Image (cartoon, rainbow, N blue to C red; front, side, top):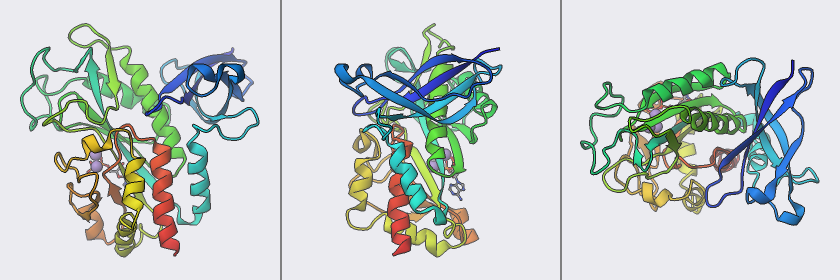
Length: 341
Ligand code: ADP
Ligand code: MN
Ligand code: MN
Ligand code: MN
């Protein structure tokens, strides 16, 4: 029996790349191999030299089609088999390899917002819902919008074997979060991109109360004003941090070294300054701070970590629309190079 391999890759859309996919039918004794696509349709090539190569990096069971069908996460290569300029995974993999002895783990908290048409799911056509306060981790149809999709996505990620660690309703109505990890890079990026693809794909199958199909967005500030933005808090540890509180503090300090805050912020997702305003549990994009339990800091050291005297720290700055390969690569380079000096 042949099976269907859905090849998934990251395109060249600016300023924020999008996911693309297409399917190939394979004989049951064949592994998903090298494939390609028309890069002139994805902002990845000129029309006269349009071929871009798809190189499988992670193959999982397809939880939507089921059976023996597969989802195939790919990186993009040029036809000489070197990384495509839009391939951020290759650099992430190189950094992880360079500092492999520090065994960095990442746990990503992906926040996102459901939309129905032009409004967040559950919002009135005109005006606004009741102010924030009762929605975070809430229950009841007056506060919770989209739980069916969230549960279907959670189950799909589990069926696919992804390292999904949990879900929760967020502070703004229609906004949710799932967590992946902790695992190493670049695998964390592979799994996050696959989990994002599954979220978009599964939402296609559900209608909102107005009868319009639900969509999910990683927009970092989907509603201006007094409504929480959407981030991708990046929790991480090295083997040293997992044994020592001082190493956790040193890691936080290294992220504040001269030039580092600017470098990280510039690569933490388009529109990061719209979200990091200093309000809504954020530090301003142009300031750097860290502290125990401080959700208004750039970097939070969880209270359990202080108590245990070891663990991990949370970079609260990355936007929901950040590239997980980029944020993990930057953190590895900044924290591990400082730890080695
Ligand atoms: P909060 O919402 O309080 O910030 P979450 O429970 O949503 O916290 O997320 C905590 C994250 O921390 C999880 O994604 C988990 O994978 C990650 N994490 C836990 N321990 C470690 C560790 N040692 N190294 C890296 N990440 C970790
Ligand atoms: Mn969380
Ligand atoms: Mn959250
Ligand atoms: Mn968090």
